[in-house]
Length: 278
Image (cartoon, rainbow, N blue to C red; front, side, top):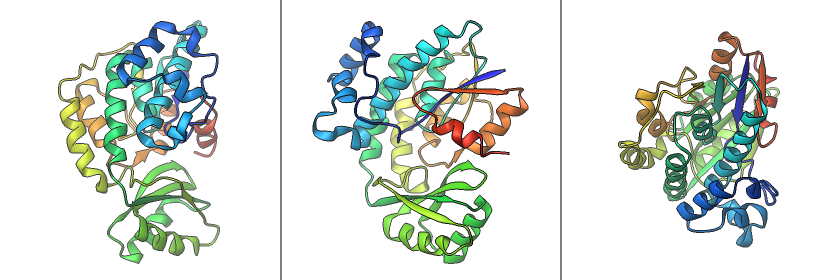
């Protein structure tokens, strides 16, 4: 069986979606109306380098992912029974599976980006070469209260996030582990940690009245790593900003369900991670 994957923030780049928007004029016009600016201009030309700002990067990635997803599903004669997305990409998975309407999801993503951009003073670093358990033990031993594992991406790849100063201290301790390589990420927010609690509360209020349908495909949640239950949609998407991304667990769930082929839109980041999950 096949699963269609959608990446999250981090894949944005100037020029993305070039030639794509004209294939979906109605959806592009709807996106422009919701956002109040030209999504094509932002993605293709990126005036003012706005794609570096999470408030613009999130809707940009979401729209490009969505259009690529619509095209991919249309080209796949048998469709996709499974969908999954990494963090922001989960909104795309829900749209592709018919659980959320495109318009509803874009409004949520736009609000999510604005709220997340309001939390500053944070930092994130990618950790490669050591298992997550080693990273978690190192964090406990440092005694730092404001650093957490934010992404469980692969067997030996995680991301830590939290207070900027404490992340730097933790990165030094983790970097001393044999085989570990720690790379700072160019973000200012402590994404997927309890430090994003104010955003969770505000996003929860936005999600309260959103309609989640049964859909025509199965989505695996990046929050729990288990099948996304539409009835729990508002809670799961609210928790997403404070909970770590459980990508390893999600891939394990998909494989246990019989998925043997992973297709990805907008790059190959997630397939690279899948290949490193055993």
